Structures are given as C-alpha cells and as structure tokens.
Length: 413
Ligand SMILES: *[C@@H]1O[C@H](CO)[C@@H](O)[C@H](O)[C@H]1NC(C)=O
Ligand SMILES: *[C@@H]1O[C@H](CO)[C@@H](O)[C@H](O)[C@H]1NC(C)=O
Ligand SMILES: *[C@@H]1O[C@H](CO)[C@@H](O)[C@H](O)[C@H]1NC(C)=O
Ligand SMILES: *[C@@H]1O[C@H](CO)[C@@H](O)[C@H](O)[C@H]1NC(C)=O
Image (cartoon, rainbow, N blue to C red; front, side, top):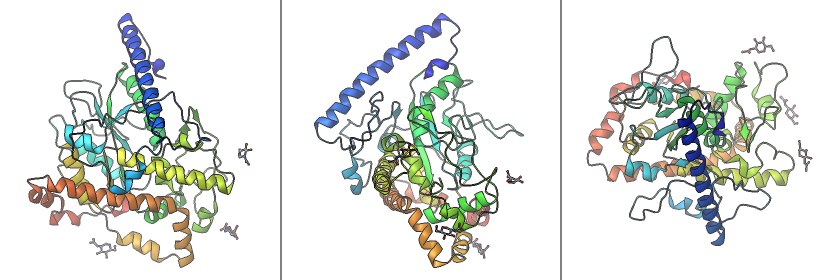
C-alpha cells in the first residue's frame, strides 16, 4: 500500500492518519454502493469470480442528472452495472471531463495507458511536447523524459506516462496495474499521500494491423520483459515465454500464432479489462473456462473504455485529436499525422488467406472491442461537433493539407 512512503516527521504522520481515515470512509461507501447495485440485481458478475470488496466503486459521481451528454453509445446501455468495477481511485469519465474540464492546477492527473504498437509512442510525444499550456512540460535535451509539473509546483506531475513519469507502474502497464498502482506511485514520487482525480486515456488500433506490428517487433527482438503483470495483489513473474533463450528473434508468423499463451493475442482487450474479474493470468486451462473468461474480459474492457476520459483510434488521427482537444479544452500545437496505412496493407497482402483468418480468430475479442470503440468514437465526435461553435476552424487545423507530407509510418509498422 501507500505505507512505503518514508515518513520523516509528525506532520506527515498526521497526513497519513487522515489519509487512512479517508480510505476507510471510501471503502465503507464503496461497500454500501456495491450492496446497492446487487440489491437491484445488477450485480451480474459470476459467483466463481469473487469481487475484491476491499475496493470501492468511484467512477466519479455521475449523479449530476442535469447533464445531457451521453457517456456511451446505446449499445453500452446493457453494460451499465454489468460488471462491478473494482477501482479504488477516483476516475473521471468522458462526460465529466468534458463538462468540468481538466484542472491542471489542482489534483487532476492524466494517465496514459499505452498499449504496445498502437501508435502510442507518437501520441505520448504529442502529450509532453505539443500541448499549448501556460507552463509547458520541461523537456531537457539529452534526456528522454520531460517534467510535466503543475504551475507553481516543483514535483507534482499532472501527466502519468512514459515520457513524463516513466514506467512507474511497470513497462506498458495495463488497466489492472494502473488503477492499482498509480496513486501510490505518485504519492511516493511527491513524498505525500493525497487523493487525486484520474483521467485515463488510451489509443486503440485495428487489431490485425496491431498484431502484425507486434509480431514484426518481436521478430526483431522485442520481449517487453519489464512488464510486471501485476494483478489481484500479486506479480505474475513466471508467466511462460513463447520463446526459448532470451528472445524470439526471427520467429515466423505461424510459430508466433501457434503459441497459445502469446500475450499478443487480444492484447487490447486484456490490457483494458479488469483482470481480477477473470482470475488474473490463471484462466488458461479448459475450453469452457476460456469462453467464460473471454466473455468477461471483453465486457470489462468495453466498460472500462467507455468510462475513460478519452481514447483515440490510430486510424482516425484527426477525429482523435479533435476529441482530445474538445474533451480537455486543451489544444495541440501541431496536428497529428495520419501514418500511411499502405505499408500495413502491404504486409497483410503478403499473408495467405488462411493466415489472415487465423490472425482474425486469435484477435476476435479485439475485433469486437474495436467495433465498439469505432462506434463510441463516432458518437463522441458528433456530439462534440454539435456543441462546438467554432467547429469549422477547429477541424481545419486537424486536417491541414500540409501535414500529410511528414510520414512517421515507420514508428507504427
Ligand atoms: C536475442 O537472442 C539472441 C540469442 O538467442 C542474441 O544473440 C541476441 O543478441 C538477442 N537479441 C536481443 C535484442 O536481445
Ligand atoms: C503450428 O501448430 C500446428 C498444429 O499443432 C502444427 O501442425 C504446425 O507445424 C505448427 N507450426 C509451427 C510453425 O510451429
Ligand atoms: C489449471 O492450471 C493450474 C496451473 O497451471 C493448475 O494448478 C490447475 O490444476 C489447472 N486446473 C485445471 C482444471 O486443469
Ligand atoms: C504511402 O506509402 C506508399 C509506399 O511507400 C507510397 O507509394 C504512397 O505514395 C504513400 N502515400 C502517402 C499518402 O504518403
């Protein structure tokens, strides 16, 4: 827990005691809330996956019924309350983010959930280098990371990401890891326990393109050994590797696809889902287990995605940038580049129909997740567009004709 913060004086003790008191209160409220949900028979999580009741739900009080902004497409309606969330931090969903805005001076933090090979590196650079702020991030030369401090503070980061805080919750930390770790990590960094409001953001990509991109990255020697796979209070350090030796350099696609516990399969769904609802990394045994597990992971991933403050799609850079700017009321200096999709298309053209079919099968959850995401993105775009009195000007900035000259397709392929 957060007790790892070194306490040096009485002042901090007092703060700590207040903090623990706060935690207890939140837990009690959470238990009350969960019983309330269950009372209304919305508590549909299967019995065999016990919910960790030590946590409480606080997907930011959406009780403000005055708001007319729908947080999710109609198709998500049946999800509401489907799986009890197990977050113990305050997270802000799209609707609230848009209505209340992001307060960089107070206790708001943007947390970037960076899924491998989605174009997240480029997006992450835009976040630290390209946002128009009174106090831009400080990015010293010869250093990979920037300091994105709140105005008038010397150590309070408002952005939790690879290029600001670094991988403080593990390499490419997923939803399960981040929601568990981010507050403690920032407490430790700032030397002070406090309650923050978290704006989770992510980028998703077409599953076939993403999978093939990961395959080629692994073929070139990538392993992501630094990933923690922390879930349900433990680190799954000894997950089996698909390769012998230190990496999988030179692997062929058929071999890559043959490994049944390859974490590339349905990566986006797994990294967005609350893994504690489906037995963490231990559910790979029987076929029936697998089907049950898949259903839960997909539902949880959709639910978490809809509750995030923001997500973008690699294939829709302009729309994604526009939604970010309107949601956070922050603008980027430079438009996002739309990477040339021809290269991905060429890579797919080299596969046999059987291989393409296999890639699809192995990523069927991600396919469904992306279908949901595309619809949700469109709904948000239409909504923000309707409410934007300066839509034309704003949109023209995103689709500036000169921007497509630069081509960072290589960072994606
Ligand atoms: C991958 O492993 C091979 C031997 O198994 C080694 O020679 C090579 O340096 C490794 N590559 C990376 C990127 O670690
Ligand atoms: C993949 O698995 C199939 C069926 O188990 C097997 O026939 C095939 O040889 C394997 N291919 C590779 C490249 O390992
Ligand atoms: C599932 O796998 C775990 C560990 O790999 C094992 O302990 C357990 O007995 C297996 N369960 C079944 C039903 O095979
Ligand atoms: C995309 O890449 C292909 C191949 O490299 C090139 O022929 C094509 O002109 C590029 N398209 C754009 C819009 O940059």
